[in-house]
Image (cartoon, rainbow, N blue to C red; front, side, top):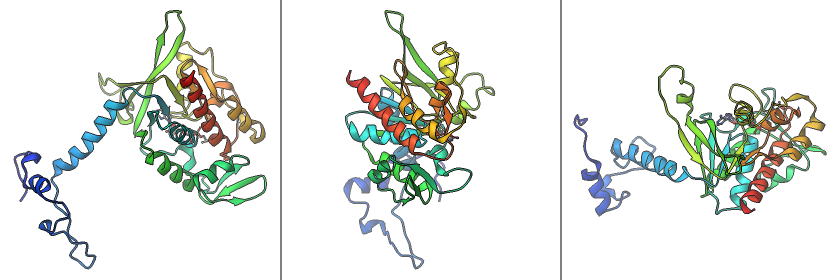
Length: 308
Ligand code: AHZ
């Protein structure tokens, strides 16, 4: 029967049994049988809640001060996270993604078609990750863009120094002024995306903050949530105006994004298509080598800043 009064999990028989014995003990009468008698080890609902709450809020507590925050888990943000966190296991790398699903535009290759095109020499990164492709000469093709995204995501999430908070939107930048009057981006203001989307319907929903010496913004080109930091630089008076992304030109766009990846204002690096809005460079459409190489360059830039 279902208990009507809340029970304290620590005092429950399950917990005592866990303390005195083992969960896989036959005391629990577990059975991995797919013939109709599959039985699970018992659990209390509160144990499930506490297992998640404890880890999530410990993680938030720890990451309130991070070494690097990456905003946006698209192809540029994830490439950046992979390179940064593997090159520097000592750094606390915190990824914030507004969507429930990480991956950004790279779940599809382009035009709602699944194959992903990557121009050489960025195919080297695919080999590093172990993503298979077909070689077409000057470019390679991964059979499904989600193969790239899911592989890099699994590699990034397996790294002990990386955390990903998805369904979490960056709503603002923390900007500090030093004693010489110079302004520096020193962190981000966050909220769960569902809260961020409802500011107009409630009177007060205060956000959270994460401080870090380096913020890497990878929020993509303008759209419902895109180019977030570039646009905020303008409204905060740190950038006169946006360059605005220009028309599609694959040959100009890809090197412009990679070579232009940099710290655009002290403490803030832009990578991926967000940079096209800042600089006024071309879009490249569905070819992804520049996102990978730009992410890697942003990671190298972050390491340079942290070590300087
Ligand atoms: O949800 C966004 C996406 O996953 C996330 N994001 C945006 N604003 C955010 C915010 N807080 C947290 N305020 C936010 N997350 O950022 C991610 C951006 O991924 P993306 O795939 O759109 O950008 P990218 O630069 O990694 O890759 C762009 C690939 C290209 S090129 C191109 C063209 O030339 O037309 N189009 C695309 C999609």
